[in-house]
Amino acid sequence: MSTFTGTALITGASSGIGAVYADRLAKRGHDLVLVARDTARMETLAERLRAETGVAVEILAADLTADADTAKVEARLAQGDIALLINNAGMSLNGGILDNGPAEFARIITLNITAPTRLASAAGKTFVARGAGAIVNIASVLAFAPEMFDGIYSGTKAYVLNLSQSMAAQLADRGVYVQAVLPGATRTEIWERSGKDIDAFPAEMVMAVDDLVDAALVGFDRRETVTIPPLADEGQFTALTAARLAMAPNLSKRDVAPRYRETVAA
Image (tube, rainbow, N blue to C red; front, side, top):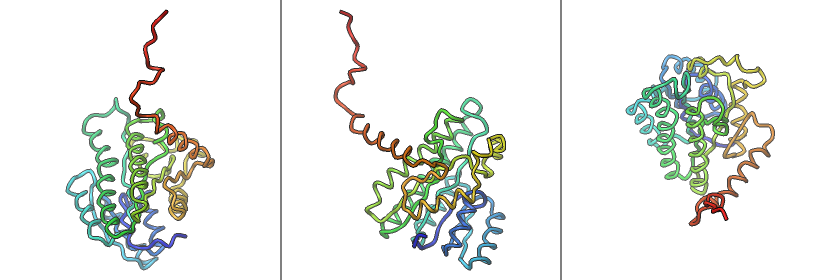
């Protein structure tokens, strides 16, 4: 187990992945700051964790689609006592790009992209100043599968993965560890909230949320940059990463690639 210590701030902490992170981190001895809209559910969770573990649990009610509420969480991170940010809050749409409109698009982009970016930035600044800290961003395996399901949701999660890998590369030598966790289909309330039936998936495709978080914490302890709990063959991700890095030097050139040059018939 990791020797990482300090207070953890968890967004989307009232249920699902966030609530299980709260449970597991409390059992590791971390004091907690729970962030979500549902104060009653957070209070119930906090009471149980205080009684079972003796850790201090603070409740911070916030709707991360609201600018003022996100600013409250940024201010809490800036106080300097947080050592670990779990950037978990997120949502999916009911339907896809043709079934929704500007309000729905703005909401998912604000919650899945803008809010985690702002919080990762606020945490990163505090952690760099202290020379220590960790940020866990919850993405999705759909970051690798834009052709499957709704491209808006998968696009937001591809962004989270991109942000995480960039921050990990930039901040590692400044004492800050950044992990992206990529769940597959996981049994949480996000499905019902977006009008989907998780039981419509084959049972072998759906992971229990407890198993997901426990695996993510193994990756955390190992200091992985990207943790993919359902992926059995790590070599597939290693090969994907190697191919991407090999392509990078060839992505910006003065000359147009020969395959795009117009050929003239003899």
